[in-house]
Length: 177
Image (cartoon, rainbow, N blue to C red; front, side, top):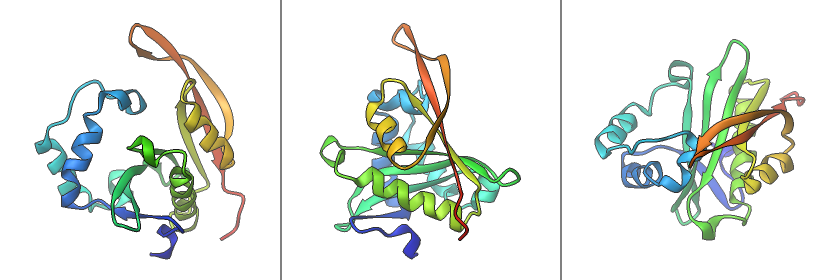
């Protein structure tokens, strides 16, 4: 699908071979804050998830894609979640796993590809994201891609004995495809 292929990266569906990659990400405590995770996931549970990954977004209300370079190496994941077809909106999140793959435009390109896919193929009217106040890289990424800050959720997430604020961003589809 051309919509999911960019200049430096492409997005692909989950495969059974992604088990170890996803297991590593889901059990990386340093990024649990992003997904509001507080417990580890077993390979068994992730395998069950992968076995169901082929289901339609209209049924499961989410879509997870792997971000790959053209050497076919998985670099991260990008998600559509809380898919609401009636109101034509969904949440979106992106994660580039390794530090050396960050700040090189991979997240930007993945976000551009998925935004285009959501607006063209899923006929969504809007996308939104939630970003912790101290996640400066994500704040810059989403602002750079035209997402507008529409709210601040005060003391929204509790982590390491303190509350953190979280911003809500939104991108309205103004293009006619």
